[in-house]
Image (cartoon, rainbow over all chains, first blue to last red; front, top):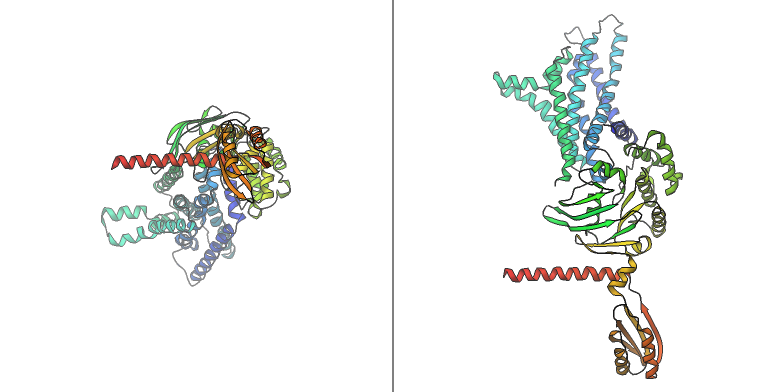
Length: 247
Length: 326
């Protein structure tokens, strides 16, 4: 893993040397900003059970679904299309180092995007006059949940990007997989009322998990599920990049 | 430096390499010559560890290219075909990144980058974005990158492809200059390039090595005497007969006759040069000699001849197989 810092720096450079990094940031902040404004004006109408940040976190899937394919589609597909993968893989670096650095770069960008929404917490604090108790625990665990689910979706995106030379195809595939994982799995709930299947679906449903995180519950089983899911996905991606050797 | 034994590579059942063996010694500049699709890039990709061979063995600096791939990569400076670069990076930035992943020590990095930029003449474009550079400059960035970690061996796949004539000359000069310190294996399908830059040629065709020698020796062994052109004022039949009778001449064919001037193409044998004897024969006949010249065989002739022989042999084998099947 000696080469990861150098590879990572190149990845971060690539995001901000092209317009992609800025476009994604602007898009994300625009959507989140509007959402935040709507939530706040909704809460102005009267007292509710919900806190502003909890509603924010329950909306996590919308930007994730669009943003993760956008920041991952380029990663390996473009290297393959332009042939730079040959330059990369004939330097003394391993396939896993490359895949890991690309994943980490995307996760850092994702973390930066969500990190910027921390401003909302400051806004809430300031304008509630400091009287409304801003419970930092659930906010922190909410961010943890967002990061945990996001980094897994990014790993999926990196895998999809390794399967094709075509960026658009990579984006469509990772959108489809993320869509299935986030929403279809959730809707299947209605098909299986009660029973073991329903329980199983609930335990892997990102919505249910996010609900918990936003309430301040950190379930270590969920943490473990996502981390091992990522590790497995990155491993498969590495094998896909290596596959040129056994074809 | 490079030792390749019986390398084969099959893509989905189609053989790209078919039992290739050769050696490259330290300090040589070897040209890998062959038409498109002959297996040049495949061989280079195997040597650099990008893809493995189906069977056979290859070592670079004593290390097996498959077993010890990372170590081999540290010995090789490679420029792939079409020279892919990160077009969104600046030249200096890119070279710094490459130096890092090639394991150049932090303390030497800045000096190494500066040195290779000077060597390849790209110091003045250090701050430019690679995507905006001309092809000639990009090629030099690729070369600079290949040189970064002071490799023993440079592998350059079609280093002059797509350049204009001035750029081609510059890149060739650069390669020649680099040849003083590095072992170089370069591939090309342009024949004069090999004659100008390399001290040994390996001719590859359809995944097989057809010849490996210096350009001079190839000429000698394959087509030594070559053709001799004679132009004489005299009677056609007699001239032809007289030339045919000269010792060392294999055949004499009249190619043209205009206003009493006879042009004869004389084929000589082996290493003999019968030009003096031809002159004597013409003097003896009492004719006037207007031209007596030897057309030097070019590498191109050798190449065409070798590949044609191989193609014909292949054709024969196929015919035989067909006959057997019937």
